[in-house]
Length: 191
Image (cartoon, rainbow, N blue to C red):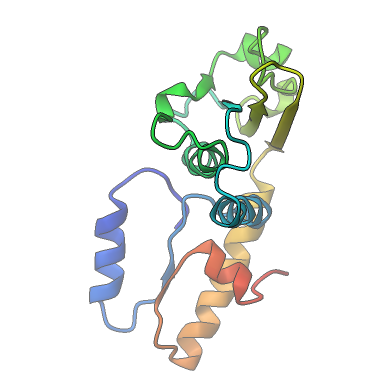
């Protein structure tokens, strides 16, 4: 189940309390994005404050029908805020959300850091463009991480890999029944 919506705790409780039920619950099913996210989490754990004083700027663009801020953007931002030693003042409200199609087509926002790549018109109804920037106080240095997805294929591929992994765990009667995408990656569940 790949979702940032719904009641995640209720999903996990339902799975845990239902004998014989196995599942993967994750906010993002794209294994490459999950690998990047996990890598940044580990980097933040190993090198907290390595970018102390740098300003974190995050911009994300999704189809106009997406009502909430990207869960992936929130999670990656938490890791980057630890690297910038800005965890205590970082809030998800600082993430710039782009949902206006005319802005998406031109790579909004047009001012400052965090500019997105332009979204092709063919992907307006299904895309995920994220730009994360850490900028030195004087602006002389900027580090960026980006992931741009057009369509849904990468999510479908990750979902298929997760389904195969979970099916194998159920077949083997594994003790663990609730997985996330990092579990799938660490278990070698990538095809």
